[in-house]
Amino acid sequence: MIPEGGRDVQCSNCNHSWFHIEKTSAPAPTVAPAAQQARKPIDPAVSDILRQEAAREKQLRTSGTKTPRQTQEDKTPKPAPDAEETRRRIAEMTEAAGDGSTAPAPKPVKASRVTAASPAPERPSAIAPDPSKDPDTTPRDMPSMNDINTSLRTRAQAPEPELTPTEQAEAITRRGFRRGFVFVLVIFAVLFGPYVFADQITTSIPQTTGAMASYVTMVDGWRLTLNETAGAVGDMIADVTAGPNSQPDQN
Figure 1 (cartoon, rainbow, N blue to C red):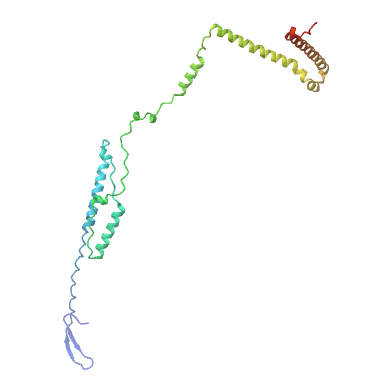
Figure 2 (cartoon, rainbow, N blue to C red; figure 1 turned 30 degrees about the vertical axis):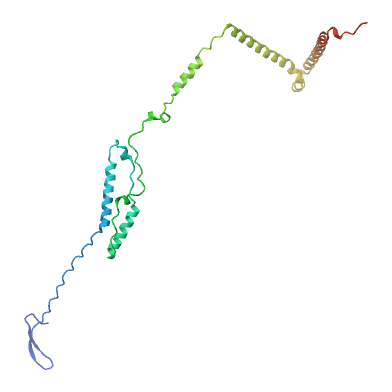
């Protein structure tokens, strides 16, 4: 290793000596730093679209904070921008700018074309509708149970209308006829019930065999008497209705 100041060196073959100075390597060339790649400017059409979108969003945000007393013109829905069409155009312009093609830049899209999309849904009005304008939709108060019970109790306790003397007499007559008819039906059932069910009664209660036989014989006698009486009355009525015309001629 040779020091910085140099030293004597002798060849091992020819014994030749000389003073050897250390060789210094040339400094490495300084590489100039690469210039920072300049950013590509944004296409004017793209910046125009972005500017229109920002203005549109600002307008929507401003209109959303309006007071409920807005005019009829503010309530009219405005068409919203076609987001899909906007994204597609921005993507096409970005690809064209990245490829460095010499194709002419597309024309800026007009705001009327960007906003020609489906109208935004109308925001519900903050003013509640007046229920007095539509009586069918006006909520009605339902009566309470106490009111219903009071009304029914009042009707039940209301006095009956007074009847005239003629109406009272007719009501008494109808009531007496109903009572008499029901009484006759009860007597008929009491008298003829044992007669009709005499066999069942004697079978169930053998001790009543003698009494039931006597009762059946008595009822049979009543039936024969009633039959003879009805026949005599019928003959009498026939003779009366026949009159003198039915008598034979006497010469």
